[in-house]
Amino acid sequence: MTARARLQQLARDAMGERGFEPEFPPAAQAQASSASSREAAASGTRDLRTLLWCSIDNDDSRDLDQLSVAEPRDAGTGILIAIADVDALVPRGSPIDAHAAINTTSVYTAARVFPMLPERLSTDLTSLNPDADRRAVIIDFTVSTNGAVHDSALYLALVRNHAKLAYPSVGAWLTGDAEAPSALTAVPGLAENLRLQDTAAQALKSSRHERGALTLDTVEGKPIFAGEELQDLAAVHRSRASELIEDFMIAANTATAEFLEQHGFASLRRIVRMPERWPRIVTLAARTGTTLPPAPDARALERWLCAQQQRDPQRFVDLSLAIVKLLGRGEYVVEQPHEPTPDHFGLAGPHQAGACDSLRHHHQHRRVPAVPDTGDRLPDRCAPKPRSATRRYRLSAPARQTVLRAPFSRKRKAPRQVSKSRGAFASSECLAVLPSS
Image (cartoon, rainbow, N blue to C red; front, side):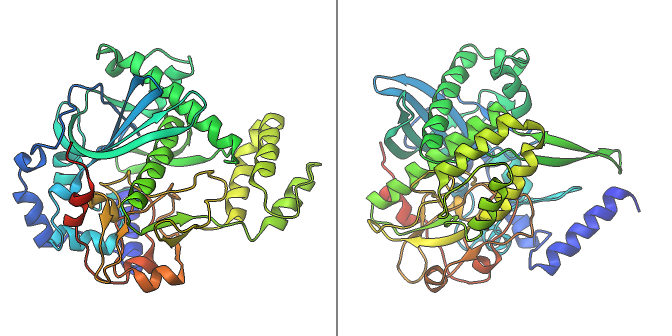
């Protein structure tokens, strides 16, 4: 047995042990085979296909679930994020929906990806592929020069991806370390548009860090295969392009949460509360000669992290990992409209409604809100994901009492406590709150 085959078998066994379904059932495969491209391209409420949409993702990504574009506005820079409308092809209660509700996420392992949706959907009919017309949910907001976000709106539209770009090459171009990739230069005006996007993203980032968002640097390992044999493990660093998308996703999630609150929808939020292991962070800082406050203080922690990054950049990745572990796991809480809930420590965002991973998260494929049997409306929620598919998130007691069935989730992990409960989602209520024009 080859190394790839052994790793694939280990992944299947691990998924089975943890309650995942590694393979699609026959009914889900049949549903995917019968799906029509005409359904995927059915008319949306607006036609935005001529905008300079582009996707930025990993080099090998085939499930493109988001696009971005910028436009100058009197009050700043308009940012539009297009999220693949999976709901158009995955009816509630269908075989694909049932399978996705069990797995809740696409699972990425060293030798194989176990997609939440069949590849005919996730990499074709609902993927925002280049030169293909697709229906999407648009998250539209304006970024001022000081990084403030205002005038946000959500609506449905038709979009068209004009360029499939990748983090490494775009990131190197943005920082002046490489020439623009050919896919970028092939589209007139796209380079200028990406520069405009980058300026807005940097303003968003600066604003968040002024409010206490944490500077952290992480490195991911990517397996390198030579045929069927594992050859190496490459380090994948964050880039200016990945940070651009990260900043946009945080702003888009905040806009989505505010949209839901304005329309009276309760929502699920993923938060990291004030870290219980703050004293250990204080001790860690003291070893470098810095005294942190006795109570958790994100701004003080951010100042120390920035100083350490400048002082010892080679070991900052290790320090970042230690801080992430000491901050603790995230958890899901229910946010009722107009009721205060805790902020996400270290993210400096008042709301985080995950709305940007419709192909990789079960709850994202229901356009905006999801309505369980209790009658309490709960929208989709997610946040930046850890790489381990076995890491689990805790669901707070109020949420466990309210949620009847798990939402969809993104790439890396599945919140198993959520996904074991059962209920029914409805997507038709979503249409009542999405503007038609």
